[in-house]
Image 1 (tube, rainbow, N blue to C red):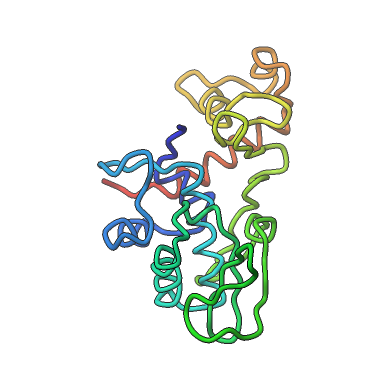
Image 2 (image 1 turned 30 degrees about the vertical axis):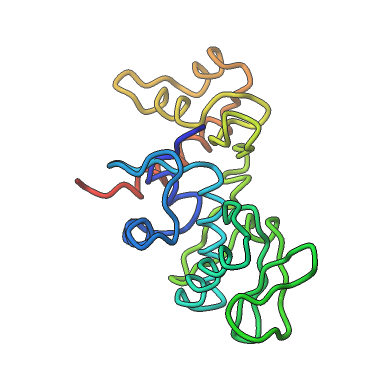
Length: 207
């Protein structure tokens, strides 16, 4: 199982260091790969965290906590990433084989959404634009079937960070030199890899 470090988790989901720490401590979302310091999140964790961030644009964290807690009460015991939710009428519902199940209060009119909606760019509660989950940069892709969902260069299995490190290391290569090593990595892709790596780096908290 691929383990995603905190900085990459934040860049792809739109949550913060403080939120991750709080949600680990309170049990809203405990990382599957490693709970130790530093924690490592699974691809499913990333999907669930991004879902929470998306739900938070429409409702309170208290209701999200209550909804997630209620899943187990109704024997919905899969990972939260396995479910599709809806919001509306001051409540949160989950889609089941029998239709919507209200998790917070009486059923009402719900705005249903799919993972495609969650994966698209959106502004979080802090009005920060969150990257497209599947295309964090035009020439990068995130696919659970490829390297466990680690961001790679489109059409290749080359991780974005390998390219970024080659461009910015102690003996940096040019984008043309990178392409000589990795023919599938165009200069544009190299630029995107470095740009995304800088975003991820900006999410690192000083120890």
